[in-house]
Amino acid sequence: MLFHHEYESRRSFIKNIVFVTAGMYACNKSASGPDYDHSEQILNIPFTQKITLKTNDHILFIGDSITDANRDKSDLAPNSAPGLGDGYVSEIENDLINIDSFQNLFIYNRGISGNKTSDLLNRWDEDAISLNPEIISILVGVNDLRNNVTPTNYYRIYRKILQKTMAKLPSTKLILCEPFILNNIAQYDRVEPAFHEYRKVVRTLVGEFNTIFVPFYDILFAESRYNPVASLLKDGFHPAPMGITALKDCWLKILS
Image 1: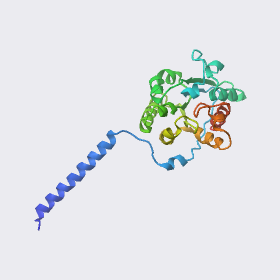
Image 2: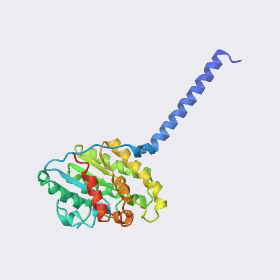
Image 3: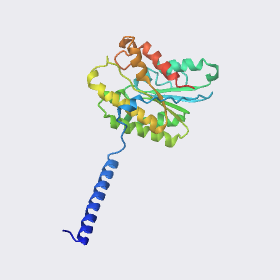
Image 4: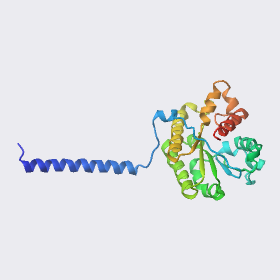
């Protein structure tokens, strides 16, 4: 039988242990850094936010080879056909510039083949911040995936890009494009599980930073049910002509 002072002492000891353990857990969780929403439910959230273009907006498209699309990197002028490449950026520019109210848009392409999120982060000041665009559209991820970057690291680096943008260009509107692959990519069975985690990453960032979302994968996957995958993506990730048009049409649907 415990006397009263012994009982209070033991109770105090146990409370302190619980408090310290909880504190250590919180510290470890914080030290591990931020992470994305791993739940399957996030893949079913409909993002319906749209964007309104203004007559003289500067729009930057940036990312990897899918955005690059063989552009002439010595031609950095807006709306220049060689500098826009022969992919979805060029098709978007062509459609928009042919609308009377958008003839004065300034559209830039700063995609670079092979880029991962870490490469974008390293060149972000020069290729994004320096242009001071009203709108930045980002498509990046497939090279991270092919180089075995973990979804959590993909999230953390991508998040740093968005944080830097919001700190330096708080009025700039962000558009996050969903990365995509189809089942004709090499080693599809190996990369497919991580790919769907990448999709969760982008959706997490869309919610976290209140950005516009372009569901590129959803559109291409839907099209692949009725068309040969190679007619959409030549090698599972580089768009064929039909795929380029699908990306263009999908992107334009975010306009209000």
